[in-house]
Length: 405
Image 1 (cartoon, rainbow, N blue to C red):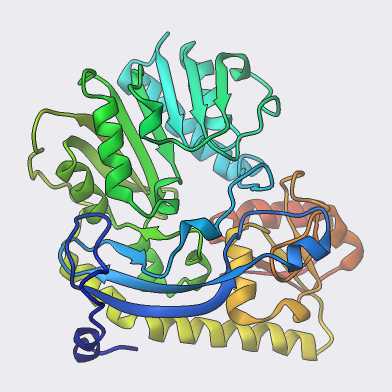
Image 2 (spheres, rainbow, N blue to C red; image 1 turned 90 degrees about the vertical axis):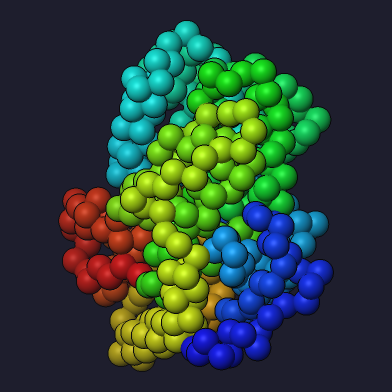
């Protein structure tokens, strides 16, 4: 744990500046060296998974706006292509959340026979839902998109563009722009928001929706599994809203969702600098600084807890499985060093099954494999999924302890 005086001594050099507000004076904390640079990629060959490069992470907090970024991040280290498998829609809980969100946006924004652009569309399932519900046309922009993979209702109304969103994209002829779980992967966050604002220069009626993880929860829980190289930018509700206002958007709402794990922001482009109206979910930077001060102590306690828990089970001859093979799992294994004590990693996403995880080389199997393995402990990588996972284990007649990180 760094006391306030130690935070003062961790001032980063003047050439390290905040990518959200442009100010210097960032303070460093929470360093992790030699971690995987890609957490969400999967590999058909174990040897390829073992060769994934590593990089260093050192978080820096902006004292002015509360934004947090990895000051050691190098975008050249990260690969976004078809091997990047982030789709969460195979979970009933996540699908219900996404469907409810899509229905709300279509109804409240009057998205019927409109044109919707999604920046960072992934495999396109959310965009397809928006198109299905409102008979809309959708354009999805994402380097990890796999044209032809999207099927089902609404898919025929979606065009996928497998590339990064950038200034070259030009004017967006869109009635709504959606961006979910993408901004945290972008280092120059102000540049992206500014680029979007310029692309909507002549479309003040366009509605904008952004969704990112809430770092304040991560800090307060010591959730080290939610901090990894690909996520180079970390927001609170306040720092996200301040960024959009600074770049010429009127923030219509900012709130927490998905069991308060995500920040949901709605905005519109306006002329000049936006006003300073704040919403209840927004916090002042001093609150973030307080959470930062206790973060490393909480992480140390969480790492120790899981090492003792898994190593103790292993020593007793018990089998331990992890349910959920995504980025959280890779970060968990990297930080705890427990890969050799884990007997199985399972995931409901069929595009992950039979593939191998970065750096640890662990194979991902279907949940049904636990019937034969019969683990005594199943570690769930997100507590929000415990009810559906417990129900699936019961349906498979796998009697085990279920514990969430």
